[in-house]
Length: 294
Length: 294
Image 1: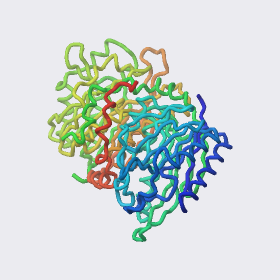
Image 2 (image 1 turned 45 degrees about the vertical axis):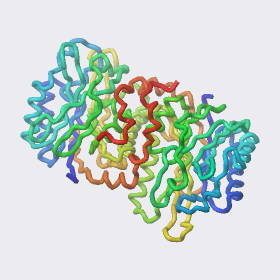
Image 3 (image 1 turned 90 degrees about the horizontal axis):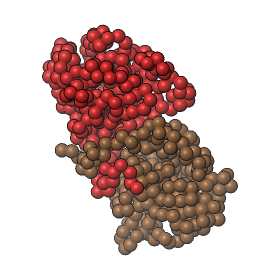
Image 4 (image 1 turned 180 degrees about the vertical axis):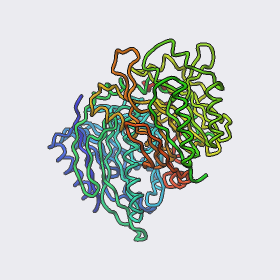
């Protein structure tokens, strides 16, 4: 298990679900021919980022899990012999929807799911309208390539989520993501935002002594209501090692298939030298469970 | 309160406590002539980094709080009209010692203390031998320049500490520090270590939407037992803003007085755009209080 070859499929989206999905599948196959044993797609990879608006008909995009999408991706994982991290719009019941990562093992078996726990809501990212916050907590998904701490996008900003995955034995953290700018933001501000996004995740790697894999959407998607300037997804997918060091980083403008080798054994070594888990003051962290200490 | 001029006194140490302290006082005065309203000294600034060995006679260096050291620093804070963050070796009682940050307000009043909660112990940093872990938790210290989330060195690696300070209304995080390398470490490893140290703290700034001030010791200190190669403290003191952006950064080799302007009002703005505190899943964080989720 020491060396793991992981493929990050950084993609732009356009066209129908069928077209988009077909191109995802093509990329998974290409990743597998490059020797990847773990393949990660970005958040909600089967179409445009629909939470850019609140539009009731978008709920029609959701599918049950298991369902048509999982059947297709399960078959691809088995065909390619890869562990596959997908990100789907799940219809759990009538009027009950989640933003759900589904992981398939290399034999096609559904290894587990993670329902996005932290749900954002700000102009252009109206996710609270669509997604019920997950109710299954933070639990790594056991696969043949390791214990995967799969989290989704907005979860990236919360050290608690990363820590809980690490405490439950995650071998690495994986974030399918769809993050971008309002194209009207000033350039300095854009750089800070992207840099902050990278930095906070590298921080999770460091604080927990485990690698982080972040796979982002890329490219411009226009506003379906033609009111705003749309969203510019910033790509920049990356892998950081257990000390936050860059193991690989994609560009910011284009589709890219990034294949990176991760040494999963390094975690033990790094944690021996930086034994943060040894010294956590669990007797004094109680107020973490409060909204605010006022 | 919007703009705060903070001085970071990055220093090397040598000589007796009296000599070292005198030079600290000189630096505080110099910081005040440069307009600083908040002055931060590195960890255990009154002498060499004695936890490099376990040596019983070093306990003689400890002083009560309040005591001789606090009397001196209180007078300097009042004289200069600055809020002053010091870091002392505290004798709390017979055989009971702490690594304690003491904060003085600009009128010389002792505004509060913080006893280091996370205590490291690895070759060259035998702190568990000297310092009883703090028992006062993570509470900001209220001063005339703001609510100071003072933490110390090893605390830097723990997102929980930063979060608890932020939840208690800290306006900024402050880390007096003494961190360095074993000079025998290979060069790549050294870079990773220092970069990780910077990155994890910038991560705290980002995750909590507040600035971070880290003030490190600098220079080489030889091993008093003449067995090892001593420690090379890596300087690199810095200030990061609420999105983790660098507001100022000192060099890695020399003593330096770094004066940086911090806009404390920016926190409100950044947190409106990135409302992480709104979305924390406090219902699902319970296991943070466990040592390990096994």
